Length: 226
Image (cartoon, rainbow, N blue to C red; front, side):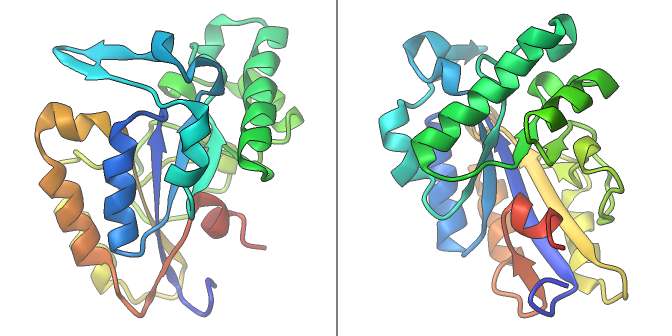
């Protein structure tokens, strides 16, 4: 299915924060691909925040194309609101505005999105699709490798902190069935600083990389295959 391979790995990380630099270095080290979901309207000091005692700083637009080179960029809305709390026009502005700004910044067409806070409904889906969004990741873990029937309700296999991560990894590596299998991991890179577990993602990437039977791609490269 993917260059003759029946298994694929992809990642989805949110917010465009400084910890992404270290995460990108790890992905690049092991030849892996990620889709980074960015908020173009708050790429400044005012967009920074704290998680407990940890400062989380967003990066400036000028540095992003080089940092994310080789990976995919997707919409995460302009200002990261709860879309369910907005009227139709505001939702459209948040999605379409972010898409347009990111396409201009990165010089590429954008097809994907991740819902801020994971909140969405059929109204949000309809508006997103009208803005040209073809898939959107939720915060609902599937704990499976199945490709969802509705890509606007795209559930990842698991968050990187899922207790069963290593069991899923072993299951995925041993899978040799006929149906296509996708392992999608999501999260926020600041969580590795917060939880002190950068070694977790390093180990995961090392163990799943360099496999001849796995395709390593961005969300679009995997989910939008015709």
